[in-house]
Each structure stands twice: as structure tokens, then as C-alpha cells.
Length: 232
Ligand SMILES: CC(C)c1onc(-c2c(Cl)cccc2Cl)c1COc1ccc2cc(-c3cccc(C(=O)O)c3)sc2c1
Image (cartoon, rainbow, N blue to C red; front, side):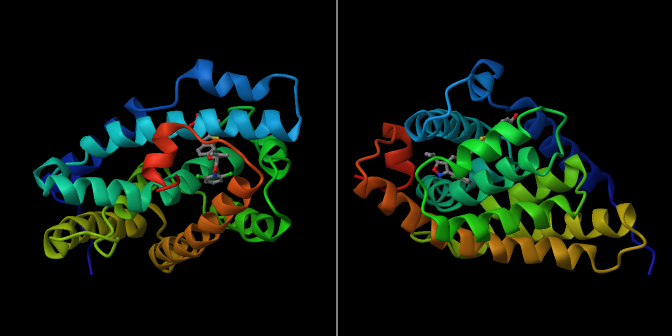
């Protein structure tokens, strides 16, 4: 059937894309990834600094998602805490899948591989990065997929499940139409995008163990990361 994006949905896409582009990690933070030192300690420190900046950017982006601020205040926090890791996998995936002419791809991969993380997480993590790279998502698809991840109703401690589900469904409907219109040769494209969300859940579980293994090797996180990831 003829797929049509309504005026309201166009406005929604514009609002989300503008917010996504407006809130980026400052250059002076990401530039540090290009400096010379490559010790495991230095890599971990730099990744911690970028991740902390990414969380701040994520909070600002989330506040601009239409409807988010009208959710229960505690639910807003629960959604941010529950989705931060997944949103950061998506963001770092844009960088690592050479989607951005940023020159960070090689250095970021090197720093992640040599940050004291145990080998067992490397394979699933870099498989994910590869699978994202193969999708050739447009900017608006990336922004919407991140939005949909944030608006996942079944995060721990979310009280008004239905309110979040309604918001997420609005975004899913827009993304579905965008996929049909922007990838007409790939009828399964939308389904493939949603499959990435499932992969993100698995990576989220791996990430909890990654944090524990870093903690046991006495790695320090920033107060913001400790708060959002419930690390003591
Ligand atoms: C605390 C730290 C050691 C950590 O623990 N787990 C993870 C993690 C790792 Cl490894 C992989 C995936 C997810 C997480 Cl959460 C991390 C590092 O997380 C991040 C998070 C975001 C970004 C954005 C980047 C980035 C670079 C250049 C340009 C841009 C850009 O947006 O322009 C972004 S790098 C980066 C690193």
C-alpha cells in the first residue's frame, strides 16, 4: 500500500534530527582520542572521558525528544539509565563503521581493543559494529533508532509502561515508513534495524560484566558514569 509520512511525522523527524545533530561530543574531547599515547591505562582514561561526555550529550538529546519531558520524572531517569549503554553502542558504531568522515575509526578501534577489556567481549562488540556498518543507515534513521532505544518501556523501575510504549510506538511507526521510502529495494530493512535493537540488549548484558572486570582491575569511572551505571 502507498506509504505516506504525515505532516506531523515530518515535524517529528525534523525535531529529532535537529536535536541529534545539535547535541554532539565537543571536538576538544574527541580530539584527545587522536593523541599519541596508547597504553591500556591511557586508552581506558580517554574512553572514560569520551563516554562521560557522551552521557551528557545523551541527556540533552533525550530532553529534546518530543513527549519525553511530559513522562513521569522518575521514569525519565529510569529510561536514561536503562538505555545509556545501548545509545553509546549506537553512537560509537557510527564512528567505527566509517559512517562519519571523522578519522577516529582506526584510533577508536585501537583504543577499545587495548583498554583492558577481556577478549570475550571483543567478538560480539565488533560483530555488532560490523552489522551496523552493513546497514548504511541515514542520519534520520540513526537518530530515530537511538530515540526508540531510549523509549524502551521495559527498562528496570519504569512505572508508566503504557505512556512510554505509546511514545515508542509513535517513533516506530515513523521509522517503519522512513525505511520503506528510503530503502525501497530492501523490504526487510526495517526488520533488520529492529534486529539491531535485540543485539543491543545482548551487548548491554555483556557490558555489565565488562564493568565488573574493569572494576576488579581497579579501574576508576567518573561520578556520572558510576551514577548512570550503578557502579559504586
Ligand atoms: C567508560 C569507558 C571505558 C567505556 O566503558 N564502556 C564503554 C563502551 C564501549 Cl568500550 C563500547 C560501546 C559502548 C560503551 Cl558504553 C566505554 C567507552 O564508551 C564510549 C561511548 C561513546 C563513545 C563515543 C565516541 C566517539 C568517538 C569519536 C567521535 C564521536 C562523535 O560523536 O563525533 C564519538 S567514543 C565512545 C566510547
